[in-house]
Amino acid sequence: MNQRIKSDFASAEIKSLGAEMTSLMDNEGTQYLWQGDPAYWASQSPVLFPIVGSLRNNTATIGGSKTCHMNRHGVVRHMEFTLIDSTESSATFSVCSTPESKEKFPYDFEFQVKYSLNGKTLTTSYTVINKDKEPMPYFVGAHPAFNCPLFSGEAFEDYVVEFDQKEYACCPRMINGLVDVEHRTVILNNEKVFPLHRSWFSYDAQIFDQLKSRSVKLYNPKTGRGVKVDFAGFDYLVVWSSKNGGNFVAIEPWTGLSTCSDEDDVFEHKRGVKILAPNASATHSFDITLL
Image 1 (cartoon, rainbow, N blue to C red):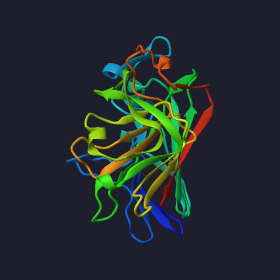
Image 2: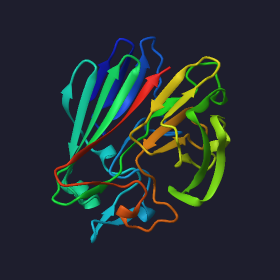
Image 3: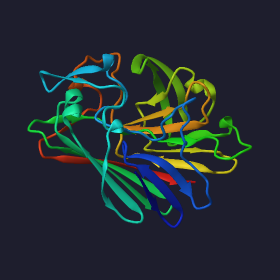
Image 4: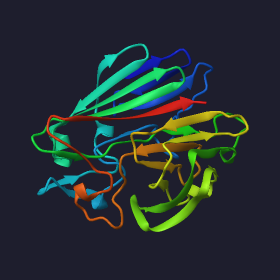
């Protein structure tokens, strides 16, 4: 099932499988969201919970004596959500833990995703509800990929990623889905902008784990067109495109990271872990604005 929402300036579509956005268009018909191509990357905007990235060997100890087994980016991206509320401009989806999900992540939870359009801005809110009797550790993240270039006649290299503050960004390398924090590359040296080039993604994503900025733009400076992502509720940002030249760039706000080279395999020891008390809830939101 696909649910369409709209504002005076834009529209979005979301499918119930994974509560994944499948379209983000302005009223002129410009499609901003990557439409998926298995030759490069078949997904479009998966929702990541209760992990972001990968666990070492897809396994970690959790809750003291339990074990979790999860493939990259967690379990909800492959689960069927239920639409629980909708208006012309918003839609809220929900999914609850199942016996199958508890074999991978041994907690009772509800996870809600709300999409709201206001003018040219789409707000996505993730609400985590702990329905277990024990404190629940978790991570949450977004993975929207945007068409780059947006228009015919443009090139990938015409676009830039620009942060709202000058950054010294010395980014760790991602290897086999994990993060090598001992080996870093300077991407920004007291700068706001790095021009896009395929070589940035020749091995994997760029991981910004020490940012001051909480806003970033992906756009063509010649036209001013692209997207702005505001991610105040997230401490980390991942920027990624496929190694084989897909015409997209993913701008990914995450609350944590894949297991890092200096970490053990205890879930609660991972960077950025959130701990939610029984019967408590927490919401993490970010905005995408069409430029």
